[in-house]
Length: 324
Ligand SMILES: NC(=O)c1ccc[n+]([C@@H]2O[C@H](COP(=O)([O-])OP(=O)(O)OC[C@H]3O[C@@H](n4cnc5c(N)ncnc54)[C@H](O)[C@@H]3O)[C@@H](O)[C@H]2O)c1
Ligand SMILES: O=C(O)C(=O)C[C@]1(C(=O)O)C=C[C@@H](O)C=C1
Image (cartoon, rainbow, N blue to C red; front, side, top):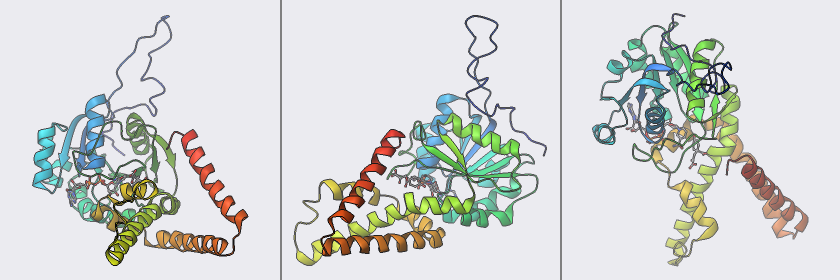
């Protein structure tokens, strides 16, 4: 593949930090930017965090272009000054890029890929950050070209906020970025996207798209489904009893409300696009919740304590892994 990717090292741990060992004090050198021109389509929470990181470090790309369908978002990105150029037409921007990163809701990935791919330069890279992988890959695949590499990725980092004001440069630090390369993904393109995420501070893991979707169904999608549901149940209860259920909803419930404040469009798309894996995890969860209900009904103290201890152990391991 004729690539226009800069000749970036595969990892920040090697030549970026130091040159040679001839002198007693090695000379630090700036890393070569991974790309000349990075186009971020959808500079919301994730896209604007990538732009801020790129601007702050200067080692992701020489030129940053933001593209958004919303005039309000474009105006805000201009005001924030987090891109060198802000454009409305994805195809016009894509023609200038050696990397296009799609940061739009997963339901928009296919239509946006259809707009950008025909305009991309030979040798450029298309990547995206969708929270689901199998259906996003299926939606993008019909528009792929042999001379444009596609590297699916998913930074496992976020907040309940969205839009360009919500982003921040350290969002990805110490967080996992899951990569799901395809059989035909060129190693050089994969290496460039790995370097980009490493320079965002992320830890990397590669897996198949199907495995990704099962993992994310349990660690991310089901927790959101439960948070939206429990808030709805509490709200219904407050209506029915005309009581102050929500006035006193502190502590445990409050933690659910943070997740439940997430963007409806993003989560509608995630649930529908990971339908199978999410429904499977929900079925397993429902069985386990029934088992807990049974233990409570029959006073099975051992079962109850065992489940609580498993929860505590999971929390402890997250803290040890710096993921809490
Ligand atoms: N929020 C998270 O925690 C999180 C974490 C990891 C990955 N993701 C994934 O990242 C993507 C973006 O999520 P976000 O939270 O940054 O969303 P966001 O709502 O903050 O930003 C999305 C942006 O995309 C723009 N957009 C929508 N449709 C478009 C189109 N057709 N053309 C151009 N722009 C369009 C919107 O105007 C918005 O500015 C989603 O695919 C999501 O699944 C989200
Ligand atoms: O931390 C949060 O609030 C998030 O929702 C982030 C979170 C997650 O569930 O962990 C949400 C969606 C993503 O695709 C990745 C990360």
